[in-house]
Length: 128
Image 1: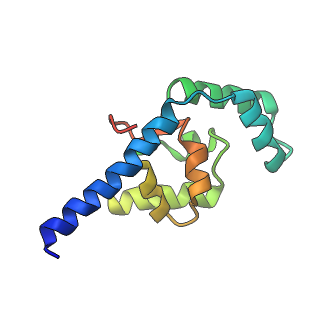
Image 2 (image 1 turned 90 degrees about the vertical axis):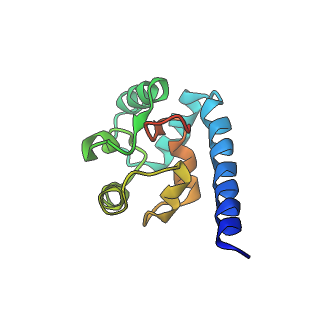
Image 3 (image 1 turned 180 degrees about the horizontal axis):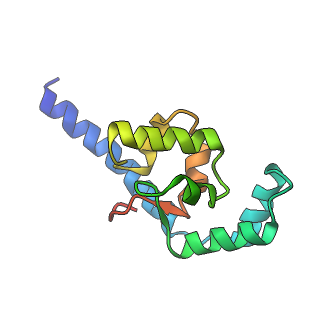
Protein backbone atom coordinates (compact mmCIF):
# COMPACT_ATOMS: atom_id res chain seq x y z
CA UNK A 1 0.00 0.00 0.00
CA UNK A 2 1.48 3.32 -1.02
CA UNK A 3 2.23 6.11 1.45
CA UNK A 4 -0.31 8.35 -0.26
CA UNK A 5 -3.04 5.75 0.12
CA UNK A 6 -2.15 5.20 3.80
CA UNK A 7 -2.32 8.95 4.44
CA UNK A 8 -5.69 9.16 2.67
CA UNK A 9 -7.09 6.32 4.80
CA UNK A 10 -5.73 7.92 7.98
CA UNK A 11 -7.36 11.25 7.09
CA UNK A 12 -10.68 9.51 6.38
CA UNK A 13 -10.43 7.66 9.68
CA UNK A 14 -9.69 10.83 11.64
CA UNK A 15 -12.47 12.71 9.87
CA UNK A 16 -14.96 10.07 10.97
CA UNK A 17 -14.08 10.92 14.59
CA UNK A 18 -14.47 14.60 13.82
CA UNK A 19 -17.96 14.09 12.39
CA UNK A 20 -18.96 11.97 15.39
CA UNK A 21 -17.60 14.63 17.76
CA UNK A 22 -19.59 17.31 15.97
CA UNK A 23 -22.81 15.38 16.51
CA UNK A 24 -22.06 14.96 20.20
CA UNK A 25 -21.06 18.63 20.63
CA UNK A 26 -24.27 19.85 19.02
CA UNK A 27 -26.46 17.58 21.12
CA UNK A 28 -28.25 19.23 23.98
CA UNK A 29 -27.53 17.68 27.31
CA UNK A 30 -29.43 17.74 30.56
CA UNK A 31 -26.80 19.74 32.41
CA UNK A 32 -28.41 19.32 35.80
CA UNK A 33 -28.53 15.53 35.43
CA UNK A 34 -24.96 15.51 34.08
CA UNK A 35 -23.72 17.48 37.10
CA UNK A 36 -25.67 15.28 39.52
CA UNK A 37 -24.16 12.14 37.99
CA UNK A 38 -20.69 13.68 37.95
CA UNK A 39 -21.05 14.96 41.50
CA UNK A 40 -21.62 11.41 42.76
CA UNK A 41 -18.14 10.45 41.59
CA UNK A 42 -16.31 13.65 42.53
CA UNK A 43 -14.92 14.76 45.85
CA UNK A 44 -17.69 15.88 48.17
CA UNK A 45 -15.97 19.19 48.98
CA UNK A 46 -16.76 20.70 45.54
CA UNK A 47 -19.67 23.13 45.85
CA UNK A 48 -22.50 21.89 43.63
CA UNK A 49 -23.49 25.44 42.63
CA UNK A 50 -19.94 26.31 41.51
CA UNK A 51 -19.69 23.10 39.52
CA UNK A 52 -23.02 23.72 37.80
CA UNK A 53 -22.27 27.40 37.06
CA UNK A 54 -18.82 26.63 35.68
CA UNK A 55 -20.08 23.87 33.40
CA UNK A 56 -23.03 25.97 32.28
CA UNK A 57 -20.66 28.76 31.22
CA UNK A 58 -18.44 26.33 29.33
CA UNK A 59 -21.48 24.71 27.74
CA UNK A 60 -22.51 28.12 26.39
CA UNK A 61 -18.95 29.04 25.34
CA UNK A 62 -16.56 26.12 25.13
CA UNK A 63 -13.11 26.24 26.70
CA UNK A 64 -10.30 26.12 24.14
CA UNK A 65 -8.11 23.24 25.30
CA UNK A 66 -5.21 24.42 23.12
CA UNK A 67 -4.90 27.73 24.95
CA UNK A 68 -6.41 26.98 28.37
CA UNK A 69 -4.36 27.57 31.49
CA UNK A 70 -4.12 25.01 34.28
CA UNK A 71 -6.56 27.09 36.35
CA UNK A 72 -9.08 27.19 33.50
CA UNK A 73 -8.78 23.42 33.07
CA UNK A 74 -9.32 22.97 36.82
CA UNK A 75 -12.45 25.12 36.62
CA UNK A 76 -14.04 22.45 34.40
CA UNK A 77 -14.08 20.10 37.42
CA UNK A 78 -13.82 17.25 34.89
CA UNK A 79 -10.08 16.61 34.93
CA UNK A 80 -7.77 15.51 37.69
CA UNK A 81 -4.44 17.24 38.31
CA UNK A 82 -2.42 14.56 36.49
CA UNK A 83 -4.60 14.90 33.38
CA UNK A 84 -4.24 18.69 33.46
CA UNK A 85 -0.45 18.55 33.74
CA UNK A 86 -0.18 15.82 31.09
CA UNK A 87 -2.35 17.80 28.68
CA UNK A 88 -0.29 20.96 29.12
CA UNK A 89 2.97 19.01 28.63
CA UNK A 90 1.57 17.24 25.57
CA UNK A 91 0.57 20.51 23.90
CA UNK A 92 3.95 22.09 24.73
CA UNK A 93 5.79 19.10 23.25
CA UNK A 94 3.57 18.08 20.31
CA UNK A 95 1.83 21.33 19.45
CA UNK A 96 -1.86 22.15 19.36
CA UNK A 97 -4.39 19.36 19.35
CA UNK A 98 -5.92 18.80 15.92
CA UNK A 99 -8.95 16.78 17.03
CA UNK A 100 -10.56 16.09 20.37
CA UNK A 101 -9.81 12.40 19.93
CA UNK A 102 -6.09 13.17 19.89
CA UNK A 103 -6.60 13.42 23.65
CA UNK A 104 -6.40 9.62 23.67
CA UNK A 105 -2.66 10.04 23.12
CA UNK A 106 -2.37 12.10 26.32
CA UNK A 107 -1.47 9.96 29.31
CA UNK A 108 -4.40 9.54 31.68
CA UNK A 109 -7.17 10.28 29.17
CA UNK A 110 -9.67 7.58 28.34
CA UNK A 111 -12.50 7.77 25.83
CA UNK A 112 -14.99 8.27 28.68
CA UNK A 113 -13.03 11.35 29.83
CA UNK A 114 -13.06 12.79 26.33
CA UNK A 115 -16.81 12.23 25.96
CA UNK A 116 -17.39 14.16 29.19
CA UNK A 117 -15.33 17.05 27.82
CA UNK A 118 -17.03 17.31 24.42
CA UNK A 119 -19.97 19.53 25.44
CA UNK A 120 -17.71 21.94 27.35
CA UNK A 121 -14.44 22.17 25.45
CA UNK A 122 -13.16 22.66 21.93
CA UNK A 123 -9.88 23.31 20.14
CA UNK A 124 -10.48 26.89 19.07
CA UNK A 125 -11.13 25.96 15.46
CA UNK A 126 -14.08 24.98 13.30
CA UNK A 127 -13.73 21.25 13.83
CA UNK A 128 -16.15 20.95 16.74
